[in-house]
Image (tube, rainbow, N blue to C red; front, side):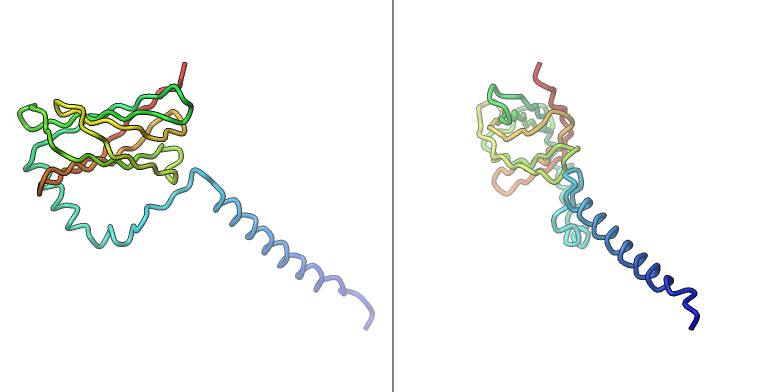
Length: 161
């Protein structure tokens, strides 16, 4: 052999090692990204689509409405969620349990939950951990006896002045 072309196996090996290293780097970046989130149990939710549509029909039958307001507390990272539940006629819905899952749209993987306590006249409130200002998604579940009402709301949490 005359020694020409001896470096090609090294070039190919270098390309393979570089490609594997780049893929590992991309994987580490993708899995450490706080803005990335996967819907928990999304496959089960897709299979249960008929149940979701049946719940939407029950929501329409009940005719309830939920409005919510997020408020920053004096302590950083803490807040207060106030929800008002009314029936079709606008009368307050009392004697219910209100549970909320909330997360900022910019960090959908950071889900916080809260059980709101009745304050009277269809108003329910409770403390909630609020990590950042911005647009939040609130998944509200109102239960009164056998009646269950669900609603997904978007609420803007203003930055502290």
